[in-house]
Image (cartoon, rainbow, N blue to C red; front, side, top):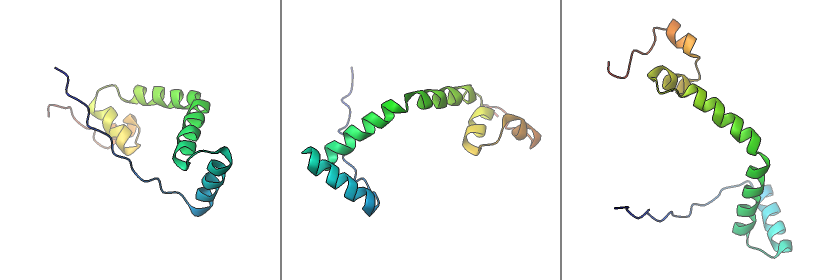
Length: 94
């Protein structure tokens, strides 16, 4: 049995006044809502950055090998070697 996903609520997007003006003008001259312009722009930007995102995901997966040490490393920004120098993390069961 699959439970229905809860409806996602909309959240306000806060931008600086200059960016809001750009969004407003762009939406006006393209004949679309600000919401639709921002949604389209984000999709295009993420598509353009796809390779950088992929590289970041691969780096994160290299760090997250399932060990407590890798999780601490990711959360703190410390290398696994430095964590070991500071006394290590032990194990999940400890």
